[in-house]
Image 1 (cartoon, rainbow, N blue to C red):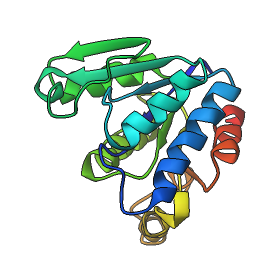
Image 2 (image 1 turned 45 degrees about the vertical axis):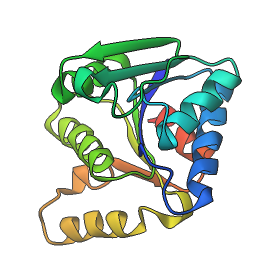
Image 3 (image 1 turned 60 degrees about the horizontal axis):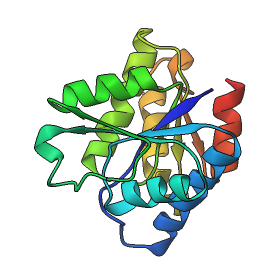
Length: 179
């Protein structure tokens, strides 16, 4: 596995533990020799993880739509920054550049990106692992809801485990690498 796309907030969130989780994920990626592919911003958790990867000498590749270039304040110190037309092109390029996907705490955009990759996996569009870093229990309710979807026969048995959930970066990376 050469690179992983990480989806996360352009905000820091309400708790300091989210930024620490982003730094820990950056350390774990660099420790495994895995490059970061992400949304290209320098603010919020996006900036935290990119800064940590770069501080440790790792590779950080950003993909940002032209319309968000100013709003998300593109990171100017990245290994590589791709500026694309729109969100569709951003997500497609991030998927193409990545060997797996991780969602960290974030908002609606993070969820949308996570579920698109899960849906693509379910449909056989890709066979790349998808994980969730459940920092501080952030995704407990989401994991419970996906289990509910399975119990109610909206998510098939063979798709119920597509979203790997772990609280620690090293454990999550180990699962993605083993899949």
